[in-house]
Length: 329
Ligand SMILES: NC(=O)c1ccc[n+]([C@@H]2O[C@H](COP(=O)([O-])OP(=O)(O)OC[C@H]3O[C@@H](n4cnc5c(N)ncnc54)[C@H](OP(=O)(O)O)[C@@H]3O)[C@@H](O)[C@H]2O)c1
Image 1 (cartoon, rainbow, N blue to C red):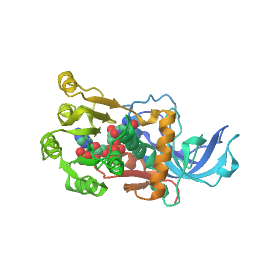
Image 2: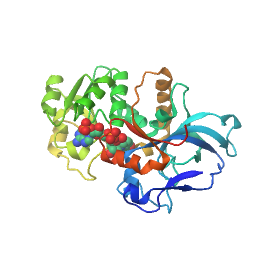
Image 3: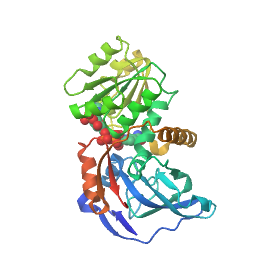
Image 4: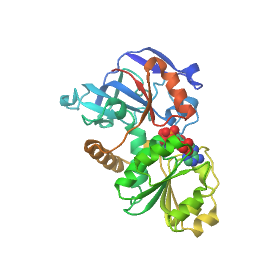
């Protein structure tokens, strides 16, 4: 099979190569998937650079956790009826060396989730990290309640765009931050009632005025280190800051402002979703996909030979939506 790989950490075009490798053979409990599309996430870039949360403990790595394709073989214990099933994949590159940037990937059968017929492979390749993270951010700790205000920081980001929609689906009112008119339009189209240009406007003042001075019940935070200085000011009493991203690995939290505001902080990493929560997430997302109401956003697709450019695009962070490597038409 064709596969992209790296054997050392570094810049995309220095370390990422495409080569021929043996087709994987599915082991017991595994399926083999003919990959059609492979999603590129910021964590794939961080893993390649060695700045991510996961250790790079393998001599050769095929990148990317997310993907979609068709099951073409099954290992012992997996029903043969799964052969031919359209699927999307999660955690293909978490605690495993070989991810989805290849013609085939073999992985535990539960990590290949049936992809509804109304969803194409490119979209299916953007669900594992972005959609499941957004779902957990909205649902964790009792979830968002109808009528509550939620602030989605980075509402035009891959995760933020889904988080706006999922919070709205629960009946919440959403304020989103962005940094450009194009991103503002994207967040508004997803359902954000108020969109704040965080570079041009006063986020704290706007949130306070929109919420009658109370603040939001929940912040869904993409840059904890960047925004923690003012987060306690926008959270309502006993509100929650749900953190899934940060521009720096360390951040200083004000004890005084947090304790006086009864602010809760919930950090999570979607790779480590507890199994019961994962099952709920997969069921809920499948329902949403089948219902057809979710807006998806593919910013760019690249052929496998241009995987380095795909990584550079994610690294630059200027795209609106997901970046996908198309493996098969
Ligand atoms: N914990 C987890 O399991 C998990 C899962 C998925 C992603 N992540 C992490 O979350 C981050 C975003 O991932 P993504 O795929 O959504 O990336 P993305 O599509 O590139 O979106 C990131 C968004 O963050 C916004 N942003 C950047 N700095 C900001 C700041 N200081 N305040 C508010 N918004 C800011 C940007 O929007 P503006 O330019 O409009 O501000 C951009 O739209 C990455 O660091 C990723 O590694 C973590």
